[in-house]
Structure formats: structure tokens, C-alpha cells
Length: 379
Image 1 (spheres, rainbow, N blue to C red):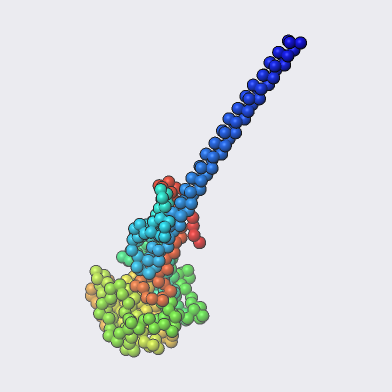
Image 2: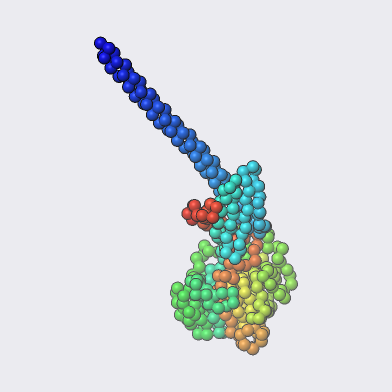
């Protein structure tokens, strides 16, 4: 009887020990789990805080991009340094005109996000330029004239990187002799019959016969009035000159190869009747005339003739050409060399459709010096 009681007491003791051990194990396990969950919660909170800062820093950098882009568009760009935006943080932004690249950083706490944006300046040619030589009516060309629609640099040298444009564009008819050569795109200038690929036959609906239309201005626009003068130009340096004349048989000498004129030269009257204006010398830019004679002239860019009733562009002479025209003393040979570089960098006229409209075409982002976001193309 005593033995049985001792055995029961021993068994109860063992059971209590096992229960205590289990309780301890459960307590340790629970503590470990709870501690782990607590640590995870703290880590999540920290990660969430960093992610919030990252997003805020990105927004700040993008604000810098927007502000600089506005400055570039309005020609009022200035660098931005540590500009505060509310209580979030600061941003800085700069623009490199040589590469058309905006670089901006946004900083919130210890997080810095850098954004680079490639800017497309949106440069275009005036819409009335349909070839190296454009005539809204007839072309009557002769006397050693070369019209080359292949693309040229501003220096007059060929640019093999661009395809170029049409050599001639006309609405009604063209007449020439065997001293006239016309080329365009990748085709070298040749005598008549001209390669059809270098000739642009204008549609009758394509009626850009006003100065405003050539430049992409609304017909009712008076913005060109500020450039008008009743006096013939004597110089032109990357500017706009509107010679409003009803005269005939005038001669305009446009500089030399060493010191050429540049910009936009307009010679016209309200009825497109300024006639037989003889052009000599060297010009880099766009010439817009009612009708003109080319005599010993080099134009790097393009020329547009607007006369609706006669030969808009002709060759010939009212007098001997300038001996310093860069083509040889007393020569009557002329050349028109299409240049996209020149035509896309003309002096800006407010409201003209060719005026650049910069936009962001791509951007990339990195955080604290390491790439995070891939380059994104903005359509």
C-alpha cells in the first residue's frame, strides 16, 4: 500500500515537471515570435518611411525638371539650387544647352533622387519652304545656276548625316537651260531633264503666297510690322529685315563669303509686286521675295518666291555682280544650297510655327548614385 502511494506521488511529480517544461517552451516560442513580429513591424515602418521619402524626392526632382523646362521654353532659364518645396525637402536643377540635358535632384532626409531629362527642342523649318528654291508660280532659271537640295552645313559644306530636301518646288511651270543644275536628297545636281525625285510639284491647295503663310503666322498677325522698313537693307546679322518696297530693278548686295549676311530677309509689298529685285553676294538664312533675279549669289538655306502671276525666281542681271561675292570676280554663277541647320536656327519670330517648342522626350532616375528607374520614353 505504501509502495503504490509513492509511485503515484512520483508520477505526479514527473507530470508537473513535463507541464512546466512545456509551459516554458511555449513561453519562449511565443516571446520569440512576438519579438520577431515586433522587429518586422519596425523594419516595415522604416522601409515605408524610406519609400515615402523616395517618392517625395522623386516628385521634387520632377518639379525641378518642370521649372527648368519652362525657363528653356521662355528663354528665361536660370539654374536652381536647393530650392525648398513646402516642408518636404529641396531640389536643384540645371540645363546643359550643349547636350540639351536637364539634370535635377530631389532630397528628402537622407534620400536623394537624381533625374536626367533629354530635351527635344522641337526645331522645324518655316512651312513655306518646300525646297532649296520654292516658287509659288513659275521658275525661269538659267545662267550658271546650281540648286542643291542635299543637306549642307552652315559653312556650305555637304552634310552626309541628313538626307536633305527637294531642289526645286514650283506651282505652275519651270524653264531652264543647260547651264542649270538641280539636285536634292542624295542626288547630285544635274542638268535638265531633272531627276523627278528632286522636284516638288506643289498642289494648288498648297497656297503659301503671303509672307505670313511662309513663316507659319496667322494671316491676321501684325507681328512682322516691327521689322518693316522702307529703306533697303545694308547689313543683316542673325536678324529679321522686312524691306517693304514697290520698286523695280533694285539691287541688293548681301555680303561676302568672308562676311555673309544671316537671318531672314523679306523683300515684298502687300500685293507681292516688288519685281526684278536683283540679289548678289552671300547669305546664310531664308530669303523671301515677291520675285527676284539671282546674279552672282550664294544662299545657304533657302529662297521662296511668292509672285502669283509671273516668274517668281529668275536668273539674270540688272548690273554686274559684286566682285567679292566669293564666286570669282565678275562671275554671274549663282548657287542655292539647302541647309537644315540654318533653317532650323533662324531668328525667332513670336507666333511663327517654326519657333522651337521644347519638350522632354526621355528621362532616367537614380537614387543616391545608383540606378533605380530605367529610362522612360515620353511620347
